[in-house]
Image (tube, rainbow, N blue to C red; front, side):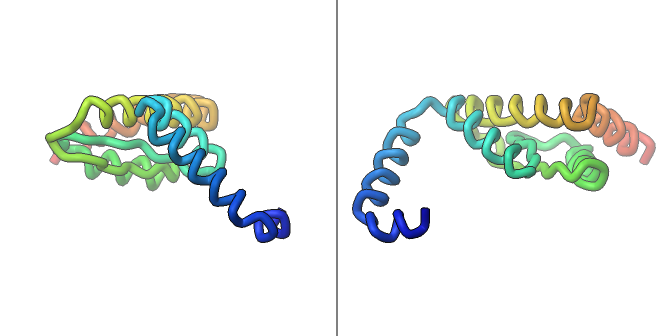
Length: 122
């Protein structure tokens, strides 16, 4: 495969550009879903968030990472676009379903409840 790519550099670049152009014009929800499937396939579990963080969000992120190896990534603050909301919703939907299959339960709800409780007890 490496040999094929090196022999056909112009063709490889043309195909890569064509793929990028097609992906660029896909709806955000489809892109979010595709990226999430790619991440899950390589064993990277991440949930994305935006907006004003709840007081317990740092604890939630710590619990997800510590218990299940799932990262929490804040992708935007309070100002979000419709396409970002679509992207994040699709991305998180794929990751949540994959995590539920992997762990056999809703680890996100579990960690959120535990984080809320920990912050209330403080």
